[in-house]
Length: 611
Ligand SMILES: Nc1ncnc2c1ncn2[C@@H]1O[C@H](COP(=O)(O)OP(=O)(O)O)[C@@H](O)[C@H]1O
Ligand SMILES: [Mg+2]
Image (cartoon, rainbow, N blue to C red; front, side):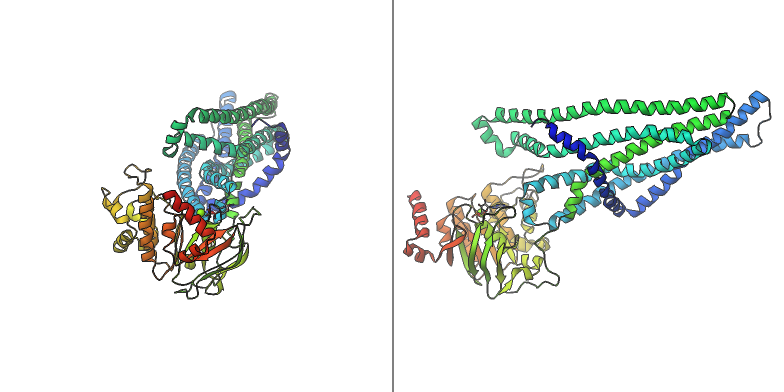
């Protein structure tokens, strides 16, 4: 990926428009900061307002002191009667400001912690409400990743917002005092600072545009880095000799990123150096003017000191305002993804006053002419599919890979809504039911079930978190899923940390994990149990054992099981063969064998491979 000059040009043109647009991010961000702790934000602002007027106070007192000294030394006048009080006031002001500044720092630290906490919680809460399809969309992954980083990388911005308030007040008070002595001086100062601000913020924007454009490449780089040193990839990488290939690709991609960053940094260096020079010239121009006025006798030495101090203070504060502001504006650009993420709304939601799921379900779950294509794709995965799961019926769903079995599970569980047609529970459209309440009636174990890096009992309790304290039920679930024997072998039993993430963790084999996951389903007091090929990691005998138990335990309940192994499929009350988005055949094992159709052919093929 080389630097695309057209893209850079376009960035250049859009830079300002986008920057102004980014300013609209500031109010919602202020809102979030305020919400993280109104008390701390209020205290900090009040303190900063006080600190901000200290420089003017110091200069004003200094002016009086110097004029008194000059008149005493050069003209022999007596010192004014309150002279030493002035000196004391100067010291008092400085000391006061120092202490206030420390308290402001303390508030900043508090606020940073509160903000991080607040925003992390909000991200987690919001993420949990979003549709599954968001997560299955790679561009969403990019956005979520950026949003996460943005939330915690922008702590500096909060401090800068407080600083900005302070700088504005300081500058305004100093500028007012300069204006009092000479309006032209003030104009000169402003004119010199503006170009530097424009330059700085322009390049900051280009930096953002570049970072944004490089996100996909950086994700690839991260993936390669992860792949190069991970437990899962180590075997294949070694045996296939892939390390050099991956390292080369990594180097190539990171070189591209490096070159693009350096190219931008070089341009920035050139442009901002020239602009800083302009600012410095303006400052010294003003300085020369004031000296001239003093030498010619129009101004006192005290005023000279005051004005040079005020000019230095105002111009440096003005520059700081611009750079702080431009930094805030540019950082707020980085928050676009965070705010867009917060603006995302789920499509699969409960209606207001939605119905409670029927207990028990009496007429079953029915697909009526359901067609489905994934968002962003036009290919129909399911085509006018009709299927009914009767109460107490155990259905086995079979079909080649990619025929849409998992998709059916996603529709039954309302992770997605159908593109056309509808799913009914007891004759009522699924969309009429309360989502959370309906979900509580279903237990699903997917092929890619979770392996939580938590203790064994937590891994099971995740199935029905309200039962986490009910050890008797957790143990019963483990017994049903045959996880009991796995846990019995662990050094710490149910308290054993599982997985490799944490030091004390013990990793399990695929089949052992699977039993633990299955216990989650058994812990749940569900009316419908769904197993979507979770047994792929098991050998044929263990799978048979697991399913035999499943069949036993789901007697009288609704169950949907998806498996490639016909020996287990045979146990179902009804077998449904899915093909080309529709049901090709259905019936009991014997019926389907007798028909000699698709099922019989698939069965024969698998049986022959065992002979
Ligand atoms: N999130 C998704 N976005 C787009 N297409 C998908 C998504 N998930 C699955 N598909 C496609 O839908 C089809 C059915 O997938 P799936 O239901 O997972 O099949 P099965 O479980 O039968 O193997 C496949 O062709 C798959 O590529
Ligand atoms: Mg599947």
